[in-house]
Image (tube, rainbow, N blue to C red; front, side, top):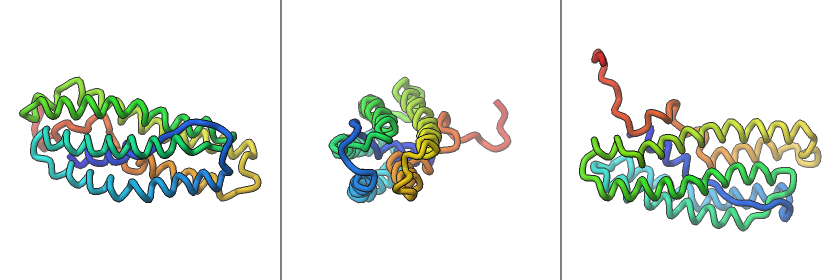
Length: 196
């Protein structure tokens, strides 16, 4: 269940599109402001999810996270990223946009299922696992693209931006919180000594 919490928490915080309105500093400040508003609420929802004793309770927590993600996404979409990072911005938010309907289906299945066994084997939980696998890969791709953008000299006037932007986006996507094996989120832990 702990892997689930981390997967959901990290999946919770990103969004946007554009290319050209804000300076790099303004853009990073905007992302930080959104994080400041949403991360504390996300932590409460993650705690609720960790305490879930039924699929229905897990679904309620996911619904709350989805609502928070939508709020975050809308706020981020209002930010107009500077041209050098417009593609990075879109990479970040496009995954979040794809995650919302996955979470919606997850929550609906959780509400309709009475037992963990049926729920954990559902297509909706499998889709959620797949979304976490994709999110973890996007964290790696984002960093690689950010490094390539920095190598092209896009941040020559603001050398602190790559580090700051990387940290802000990692917080938004929850990169450091992704489970080591997202494909095993919502799977029972193996029983020591059992063979199968």
